[in-house]
Image (tube, rainbow, N blue to C red; front, top):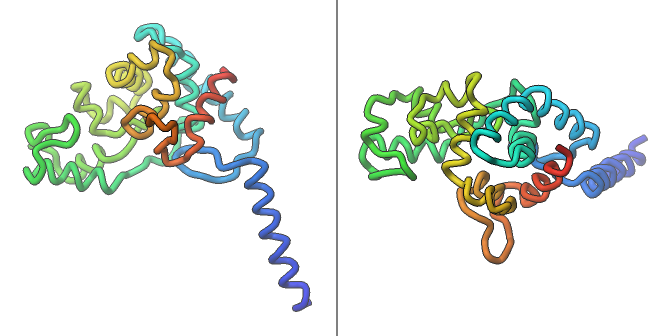
Length: 212
């Protein structure tokens, strides 16, 4: 029996490598890992079921391709209504530095904006919310509260932020840049090598657009 153990371990390693090569490492909810193609189909159905009407409505208001928004929703939350929130410690540290005037600003956030923010509020601002996983501090640019980007109007305010931030790219059909901006805050580099957490984030997004 002991002689079979190394063979069993080798088989498990070989199976894991095979599954990785077959299914790749798609980006779902900010995590990497093998994803069954059937799960992707379920996710696409969930996007339509849970967010389809709201996305279509907001897309019409801001003149944005709803297929991009639905693909983005698929990438960021898999179409789920309930999912884990992502707290970003490095963003929390930046916001805290702004609050105490160690930094003069972080993106558009200034000390005045954080004057009344307690630690819980800073943590909420440093977490991502809603179907597009917007960072909480983005609500300050919109002049709204964090609850607005995680509540019933999360799709509308998410699309409004997208339009304000990189809507020009979307209206020109520059979807690779748009996906890259959403994930990293900047357009795709000139060398076309993405800086996204998942190097296939853009490719998955473009693929999902074709399914909606």
